[in-house]
Image (cartoon, rainbow, N blue to C red):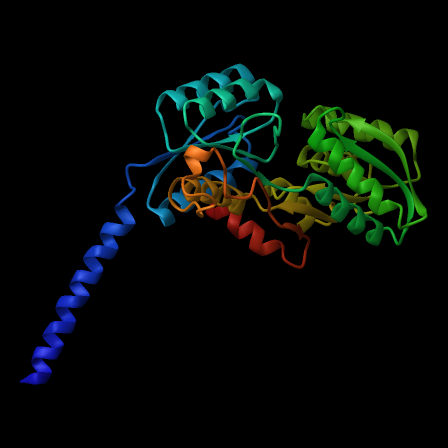
Length: 326
């Protein structure tokens, strides 16, 4: 009899536990966090969208992704302003250019914390930046290219000169090459983030330097452009190529042996960590003062660098499987 009562009590407590657990997971279901971006039509952002949604499900909050499909900053600013009008608990923004600073500051003035992602605008009133350390992306790529070349050869950089994040990546590549006295950078090509342009620029460089040994690419456009140029000129596999990011077209070129490998940003996780920074700012601020808000202080990190990874034939299938999932 006592055993039956004990089992009944355990069952009742279990029901209460499940009920309150369910209540806890949905307690903030009406809270909305908005990711404002542009170029959402690019496969690169699929992982961000996935990580953003996945994070919302884990934390039990509503996550929304907005912004133009193309590189349209006017439309992006308009999307940002509409997001502010909704008074969400927080906003994540792809801080691609300084034109977004007034919107970030406007959100902050309205009491909405903003986290920049991928790119940063530290002169704005953003709460924090979450993303890759751009120099480190390039440095790892430079190490991998130097290794593939055996420490010697002429190299060209394909980039988007004048854009800070890409300039920082180029700087990282060059720093890694300094450890290999036999490597020299003979030219920097501007792809203008356009695949057709990247192919033509890569071909022009290869024509000017017929003994070119490799391409260092600061984004996936450069990777695909140089890979296509190598294929069309009969130098696939001979000219070593290090790309950036884990787009399926880049991964497929690795599979074919045209691209040596690619530096991978922690994209899906990046969106999740950006959401965590906002969520913890709203719910879990450590008591730096007796009243952080009144004291106008912040108790969370203002910069979160996510890990840098590398994809080649050894781990390629896992990235391809993830791309299908995204």
